Image (cartoon, rainbow, N blue to C red; front, side, top):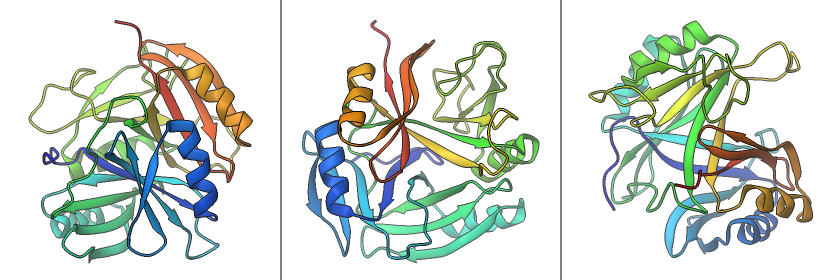
Length: 264
């Protein structure tokens, strides 16, 4: 398994009330197979390659949600920068055996994310292919504080895409920023994630959050499958410069997006 670039998204998992129901849903939607992990945790595989994990919620107060983890080669130093730049550390770094170390934090707007310092387990074994992770972006109401936070904590270099929008936008002029790792030229070719804005069009009680995207071969068929499996289509399929996408909910309420790349 190749190491991930510093600050690149390297893993996603979802917290669910019913782990077995989650296996049935995502197994049929993405063709995933599963293997048991430590405790109430199941690794998801696509074509035999690790792509995600499903976990049974240990506390009913926890959100039913997908979470993204960013790679770090010094988790203690990253946690210190999070605190220094106005973020909140939810879970201090803990070892996950020989696999690595993890922590959870929130940015100044309240969006939650994870950190992963790899040991024997690096992260995704496949991405940007059907049935695997392809993108993430944070939705926030505090863009100025949040932009500075991610640049200072992760070293992201940013490119504004006010005119064309990014993967999560379908209106021209939407305020959207793409993140590229330190040492790269910022822009769509190097971007690993992005930031969008929660506008007044959304309910005031909607919190800041990360949206996780999975690549699919057929966006419309995926949306139909979600409905057939008891989930919901939050935003029906629509075309963007990066392909065709939809925002969906599984049958337990976890929100995610799918993206069908454009035909080359």
